[in-house]
Amino acid sequence: MHNVKSELLGAADVAGVMDLERMCFRTRWTREQFLLGLGRGAFRILGVRLRGVVVAYAAFSIIAGELELMNIAVHPFHRRKGFAKVLLADMLAICRAENVATGFLEVRRSNAGAIDLYGKFGFIQVGERKNYYPDNNEDALLYRLDIAADDAAGQSTPQGEGA
Image (cartoon, rainbow, N blue to C red):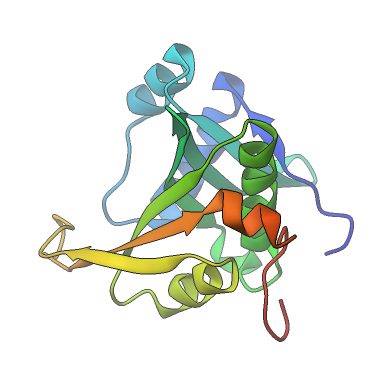
């Protein structure tokens, strides 16, 4: 997917983001939560479109020099095509441009694909939250990335074979 690019999404794109929410998550954000967060500038959404349709998105916040990746979703028919890598690389590029020092995210313990992807980008597990997810009480694993050190090492893309 060499020519795939992400773009910042806005309120007009929330319907497409909501479609992905329904396909990808058991516990979903509401339309109102997305609109309120975007309207207040509480977070940003990067998206990937194919033929005008949002097929992947990442919602994240940057507050006081810290990144928090809140959600990342890829349409089930478009998984394993590199869209999540594009979103993560572009999100981290934004962070570097804004001198963001560290990044955090939570991921379900059972989400091996996401855990592998985050590891390729240099995220390291630093903790866990027991019974975090309300739908099934699954644990969340907490990951951290030292973006400044990552930048100094010249790592703007995932590391490892096939990345």
